[in-house]
Image 1 (cartoon, protein in one colour):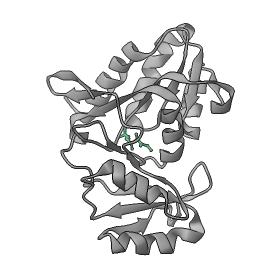
Image 2 (image 1 turned 90 degrees about the vertical axis):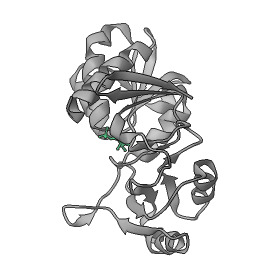
Image 3 (image 1 turned 120 degrees about the horizontal axis):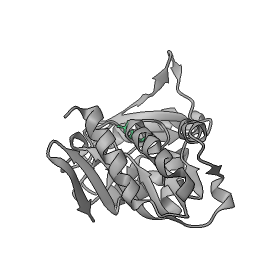
Amino acid sequence: MTQDELKTLVGQAALAYVVPGEIVGVGTGSTVNKFIDALASMKDRIAGAVSSSEVSTARLQALGIPVFDANAVGELAVYIDGADEIDGRGCMIKGGGAALTREKIVAAQSRRFVCIADESKRVDVLGRFPLPVEVIPMASARITRQFAACGGTARLRLKDGQPLVTDNGQHILDVTGLALNDPLGFESEVNQWPGVVTVGVFAHQRASVCLLGTSSGVQTLTY
Ligand code: 5RP
């Protein structure tokens, strides 16, 4: 099976976790796009969605799924999103699609995080994928030096030759050279650096379930 087919498989499998009558939290990315497309088949059985990005909002609305402001609703039963990496405890690196801040907000608002990913995302130790960190632009040079002091190399993410601007009007640093043996401690520490909006380690908001697409089908991993 191709990676795209595996994404379709887990996107469809995630429908089983959507609670009828409720509002579902929706992430961002190519795997989530498969989920959104599948969700259209049950749009009359859900109240709507809270979305983690402008891109996902546009896709949901184009399919006729109402999108609610996170502030207008209470706790969500489930949040469904992809990952760039996921370890054996359900901790993840996210933010490859630059939506990490809103993703973490919606995940924190949800009782359950169901991660949908193809098997290439499963790792023993997080850190091979460059770690996305959303930062206030005026702090990016100093945060780059702070990562260098930890052995990491931070690069400003560009789009069309210019710094990428997130949905929140901020910039993204992608950090290589880190081995995240203590994701929870690392997330807590970097979150406190002045100018860091969100670090793309999801340990406090780790997955409760991962639907992993493999060549032999969907594996359900629970944490
Ligand atoms: C976006 C994310 C995505 O979930 C992550 O990048 C995985 O994306 P894809 O499903 O396209 O591989 O964190 O900010």
